[in-house]
Structures are given as C-alpha cells and as structure tokens.
Length: 505
Image (tube, rainbow, N blue to C red; front, side, top):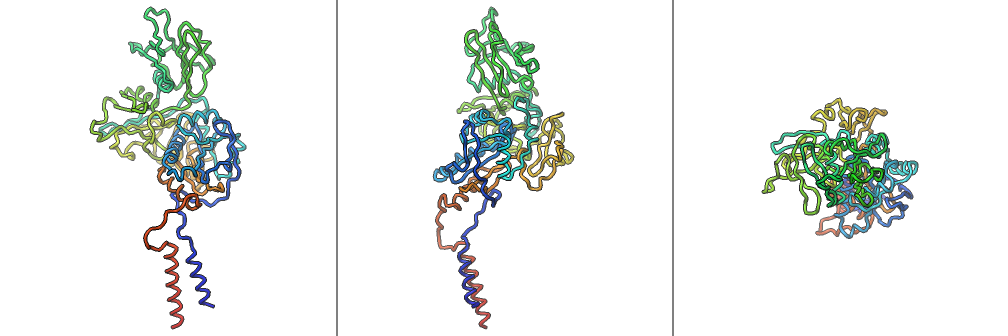
C-alpha cells in the first residue's frame, strides 16, 4: 500500500507544469471584466468582447493629463511597433478615459491624431465608466483630475523648464510663452507662412501666407485677442511680444480693412485665426502644449538664447542654448527629459510630440538624470523637503490651484490637496496611470502601474501570456537538459527510492 502511494506521488510530481508563468509586471488572478461596451473617438460602439485579438492591452488615461498619459501613449505605441508580426495580429490595444467630462469623442480623436496612434480610445457617461472602473478594481481620483484644470484652461500654472549647461550648472525657469511664441507654434503646426520684422517696440507682423502689408500703410496686419471677460474679440493694446499667452491663448491676425466681428468664436485650449481681405477666416486649434512651446516660453522670459532648427523628418530640433551647441564629434548632445512625478526620465519623443508635461529639462547627454535637480528645488514650486506633501510628492501649481502630485502608492488625505498619505496598495488613477494585459476571456492577468517602465519588459509579458494561452507556440527546448518539472520529478524519485531502501533495512 505504501509503495502504491509513493508511486502515485511520483507520477503526480512528474505531471507538474514544466514552468510557471513569470511576469515582469504584477501577476493577477481575477475574473473576467465582462462585456464592456463604450464609445470610441469615431463615435462608434466598441465591445471588449467583440474585439478579435486574443490578448488585449487596456490603458486608463485622460487627455488633460500633464505628464504620464502622453508618455504611456507613446510607450504603448513603441510596444505596438516593436511586436513580432506573428504576435502583432493577436494583440489589441485600447485606452479608456478616467475623465468623461472633458474626454468627448471629438477630443479623443484630436488626442489620437496628435500622438499618431489609431487604437480605440473609449469614453461614455460617468455612470457607465464608474462601473467599468470598478470591474478593473480602480479607484479614480476625480479631484486630482479636476485639479489639472478645466477644458478651457490653457495656462499651465507652475510649469517649468530646467536647464543644465555644459558646465553642470542648473537653473529652473517658469513657462511664460508670449503671443509670438504661440503664433509660431500654430504656424508650424498649420503650415502657415507668417513673417515679422523686429523693431524697437518688438515684432510687427509684415506678411501672412505671402500677403505683405503695403509700405504706404493703407492697411496692415492687425493683432486681435479674445477677451474672455467680455466674451468678444478686441484689438490687442500691446504688441505680439508683450501678449501673455497664458492669459490670452486665442489670437487672430486680420486685414485691417475687415471687421473683427467676422472672426469665429474660439474653441479648444488655444486657437489662431487668419482673416484676409477677401474670403473667410482660416483657423487652427491646439488642445495640447508641446515641449517646443514650453521651451520657447521659458527661455524667452528668462533671457536665455535658444537656437532651434528642423530635423530631416520636419520636427523641431534644439541646436544650441546660449550659443552652446553639441560638439561636432557627437561626444554629447542636448537631451530632453521629463519629470514623471518621482524622477527624471529621458523623453522617448521629440520636443514637438512631448505634450502637456508640467516639468521638462534640457541637459547634455553626459549628465546623469539623477543629477538634474528636482522641480521646485529653486524655490518656484516649493521645497522638496520632508514637510512637502509629507515627503511623498511634490507641489504643482500655485495659490488656490496648488496641489501635491503624490508618489506612486500615495494620495491626498480627506480632500487635503497638500498632503500625501499611503493608499495601502490601492491603485489610485489620477496621480498615476495603470495598464492591464487581458487574456481571451477578458480576465486581467498582468498589471503595470505608472509610466516608468520599458517597452521591452512589457513586451516580454505579452509574449509570456500569449505562449501560456497557446496563442503562439513556445520555442522548442534545445539540448538534453531536463525541464524544471522533470528535474523536480527526478529528485522526488531519488528521495522515494532512498526512503524505501531505508525501510527495507
């Protein structure tokens, strides 16, 4: 009887799985999230169950997010682009908003087009999304999302640009873009040709789309700005260099012979309008703030000289700061970094594609990211000592809009926006973002919190789950080495043999 029992144990041991799934992210064991049906950026209903891919990546974001969401979007874009073709057809990507008030299908479409992604970005009414969040086990911190500003709040209050020069000296500058900075941003994005002459009172617009104002001043290009108090357009009382683009994000250049009542009402976070002598107004809208605009705005206000050119792909490329350019031998280059709420990390996109980020930094590539000062160390954002945000975060904004950006695992205490206390492991979306990998039954299997992870590690988890689910085959083992399961079985057999021999003795 005893020998039969031992034999049965040996057989069971040999039938153990050869290798348990090991993930880089947090492994989960949950039930299916069920049939989730939401609306995408094209106003079409999308069902998670109805998607054909056996593996589904689901990210929770909001378009007004100042840092993590654009980063996670580009990180997932890199994951998608780097998938092996045998796996790519089995993996789908979906982003779900945690800000249904602002994230309409129209806004989600603008977000996806700006960042160059085409997977579904989903929204719905608040009640529907609250049910979806609960199915994923999320606690959405609406007050954190609200603190990032309203739909029309273009002013990035407290945003800053840190510069580390070639000698290693660091300085931090608040972002204060001018009307001219904003005009250049719109013109570059829209492909407009706008020329200006620099005089003793600043820049004066001399030509728009090849139409130059005459020397006899029979008409001129007039600068208009939107007055949010009177809810109407008005001729600007100051020049384009003296306009505070944070206070006046909607501008227009009009032929002085035209009535400004012909200008359309502005939309979006920022807009630029051109009104010609004949024809309707031409408009361009921006719903995000790029690192390019932030850099220009911060350097102009600080009196730092900036040289920006165009790379072969047509984007902006920083060439020199205060006349210091990267050496011809490429021993170092100017590197763009962003503050993710905890540390500096190198931007994976250029200054045009890095958007809505509260704090960015420019430093030689030879400077370690850990050596770049924390935002606020210069005193503009509040000191990063043990009393700030309970030592678990940093302050964004100022005055009544000041609030802590808490580190991962921490959130505000009972509505106190200047405190950070432990979440006890709870996922609090708003302070951070969260991304899940779901299997074919739409069960969350792996969780990645935050945005400070590498695409390669995430891809490894996709491959591991796809192999575990039989979506793609595991590579055949080479050589004669026994599998882990077989090795455990052999050890058990040896132990059993010794036990039997001892009992015989």
